[in-house]
Length: 157
Image 1 (tube, one colour):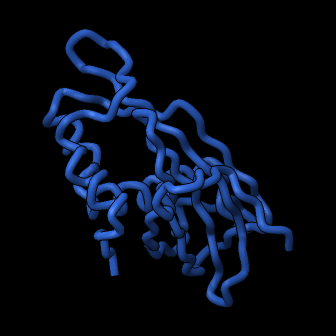
Image 2 (cartoon, one colour):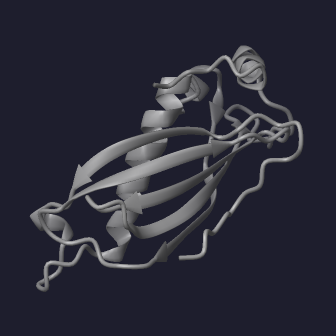
């Protein structure tokens, strides 16, 4: 299967940061044929995005405590094969480096055999909660994280 890349890593930029979460499709997430409804993929993606952001110290709560909200600006999923009731899946989240104040994540859904079931991406922007202005630079509290990332000193394993 052809590898799809939603984001690129510019020359000199650090490699994407990656984390996986595992979810089992629940009964309330499927239709009468046992296939997960397409809208529930967003929840699985959110679980992976939250886990990675929290592990890096740049989760929703971290931003919120600094007066910044990070709404989703873009969201896309390519459905390749159906997720089904009772099956456990791995959802890999990767955060791509950006000089701009934005969070570029891509996601891959894998079955127990490592087969790609779905993939997609999301982009989140950063907005000052008080004045509702879009940020163009990363906020101060993220600078140490960004420095460690550029230096290759982040280990999520």
